Amino acid sequence: AGVLASRPCMEELEDRFGELIIFPSSIHEILVVPRRALGVIKSKNELTEMVRGINASTVKPFEQLADNVYLYHDGELSVF
Image 1 (tube, one colour):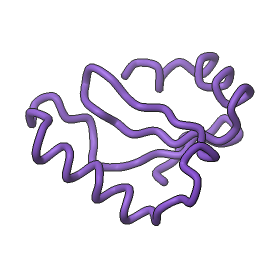
Image 2 (cartoon, helix red, strand yellow):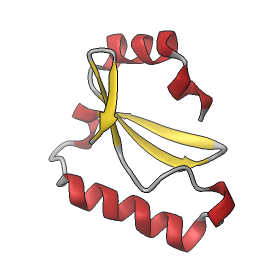
Image 3 (spheres, helix red, strand yellow):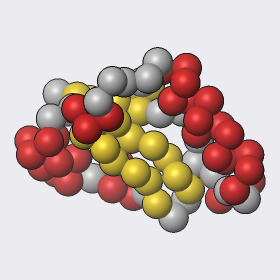
Image 4 (cartoon, helix red, strand yellow):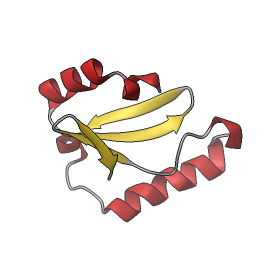
């Protein structure tokens, strides 16, 4: 999950793949997906609910990062 704090790493990924959607999986990992790879993007609420559901059902509370989905675009990280 420390990759989020690595601006050079995130910038390189964005240069290669464009806008990035970031799913905080746990304190051990995050999923970084090019926005274009999602095809028809579900609504922000659907993506957030998906993360909340996975956190509630499979991730131990002390290993959860967040229930949010993030967008990395133009060098900025924001809640999607």
